[in-house]
Length: 432
Figure 1: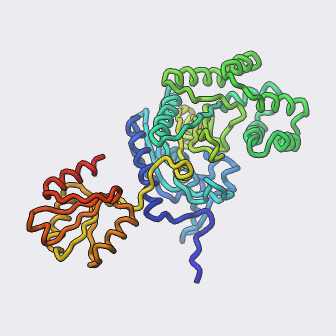
Figure 2: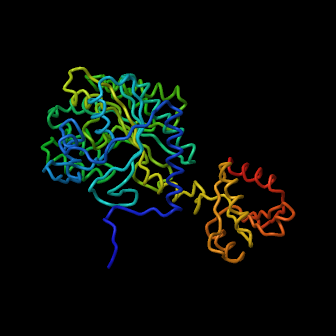
Figure 3: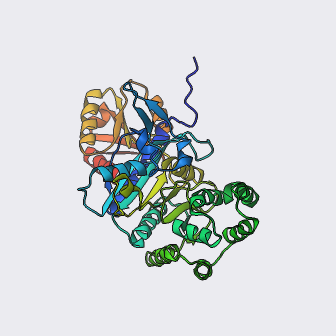
């Protein structure tokens, strides 16, 4: 019998899981540094919630995993963490605003598979509800930049604004009901190229003149964001989008973010975005897909609540699987095969070793112990294979002297030291 995993899913053996936990812990630490608190929601949602016209739009519906329960209710696996958040806010009107939350959890999409893209994957989201100012958007970008510095990845933050995109389309008299579809096509410039986008726009009955003008604008290689903003400012009748971009870039400057770039063809695929949108890419090109992305969704929550009063919201989502690929490809974090700091090797001294192991664990030192009764050679081979930093060799001779033998596996050096000294040394290494 062959045991196959569903396509687009993976097992994570200890070495990979330790790396994932390292990334997750760094993200949690960064989220909490910026005042975000944890939230958890079910993997299963009502299909009606996820497919709502106020949720992710028609494109994402093609990728939803659906199922039916025993009562014939239609359910679905969540495809992101944003729609469940909107449901939580709508269901809990007493929550104090601004509400800052993070969530790190699995999501599922039945989409194409490639490097950095899976069907079961983890998202790591931070969202703030109740702040209209672009200061909240800029703070999220500062949070992201802080995280990428911690894991030693050089990135570029690409920003845009959906209102700006709509106001550009207004210039070329593109009907409001067509604009969402046109924006999705323009967002594909990097994927299918100018000719591919032109062909799609032609099929959508956009005039040749409008196609030419749009592609000249959206494919221009602008080295100076402020010149592009001035150009757009003169062209546009509706100024809200361009003014929000100006405000965002102003605050980014205050946060000392020098890696933010205006990318006016970028729209993000989900229709719930209403203002700012952004994607973050690794600079060396080792991965083509974004490491993090997000934007403003000011209408979604109020629509879920059937309220006329807008509930401003902005969020960012980091793809854990993509981050893992980026870190692994760029060798930015030392891979570990074990979380154990020290491995105890008893030589006819199991009773004493049990007590020593307990004392180490009581002090928070991660240790393991040979329970099989292998030889010293076999045990050291095992320790070496798992990259455990230290071996603690304990025999009757050492115990008579009230000393233990500590072997540094990296250097091969052995020290015969008092128990208290060894505990102190291991505690120091444990905290580093």
